Picture 1: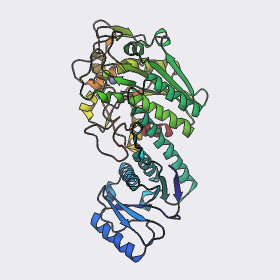
Picture 2: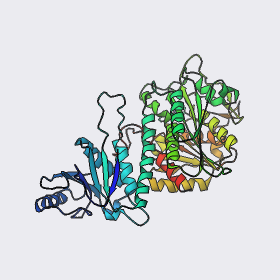
Picture 3: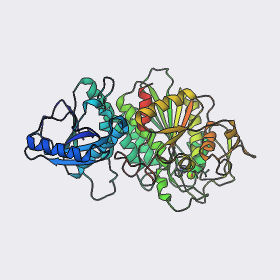
Picture 4: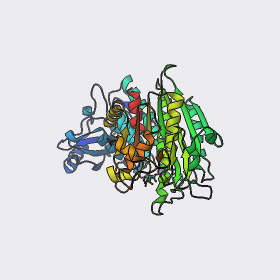
Length: 490
Ligand code: BES
Ligand code: MG
Ligand code: ZN
């Protein structure tokens, strides 16, 4: 998809889209039309009254510059947010696709542009993300060659903001497209190959650690969980070194269980297919690293993805096993379905020891309890560092990927104490399941500021997920825009 920015409508467009506010009798930024068109627009404006999400199409046979006008309601002026702009922009794009057009235009309302900011970012994100469609395995593909023209006052700064928005949206789309892959088509080796490809394109270093090296180097968590599958485990490490030579990096870690059956502690059958999304944390890191290299961010960033398939077999690890993690600490396994914390603990300890980073941020579809606590529109964040949490919170306000902090004090650490090892891989019953999982991770880190983001509820669309045009069914790419915003504002 090509995106153009133009000061005015120059070429004929198949669909000219305008945002309509409630209680407003015009769309600001619209050019002059002939009498007939103007009266149709006025009638439609009255009928729809800018109701949020309402679309109204006006055919304009007499007009030279466009074939149709799309009025898109965005609600009351005081209720407009970056997210509502994203959602309505996405709807415009989907309408253009439905009409089988090859291009469409969006008029930027002057009120969406302030000195320091322009809604161009949200329009581009909304349009691009809404047009992504997981149709890789469908014989009939949907039309995705759809060019966009945004009508707004053009400047070098605007062009630069637009380019950045495109890269960020493409990062999120890449995350979605890998996360949506079925488990027979996406194993730890597949993810490693994706990492190699984006590293090569983005001039990043990429290292893949496989068995027997994993075992030899002490990755007891990854080795144990990976044992049950013939798709062997991988530890994927990507390095974007564009900062100063001695500047400490930021380490990003993402859980990538390409399929989580639960292992010997087998999950029930209902919805087990959704556990292909248990690799979403790792896919988030892939999408961020891709974008970071394309944006050429002048910082050092390391992406670490522990990847396994959690399967039951004669070779699987079992409840009762005691394993030794990369940190040197031992863990008693009481449930093989609590596998994410084991592979993450290895990756977190490796990240800290190998890179002495400024900060570590991890993403994981870690606990079903997170969905019970916060639902499917808000991710849980736990941390050992208030300052880092604040920065991530600030980024979250800007990108509207919502997060909520849960406490993580000593009482929760006590809940994972084991009688026979340094810790156990489950808490006490179902109490505070998201926090006891985070407590396990906290034990892997010695002193580095760290936050853990549990994306179990938000990584893909589930029953209770709020509908958003830019998040069609499937993986959402949650966290990509969030962390890119954080990194850009460092
Ligand atoms: N991948 C799951 C968590 C999950 C479940 C995410 C459902 C999204 C939707 C994780 O590996 C898991 O199975 N966790 C267990 C932990 C329990 C055994 C302590 C859970 O949440 O039930
Ligand atoms: Mg599990
Ligand atoms: Zn899992």
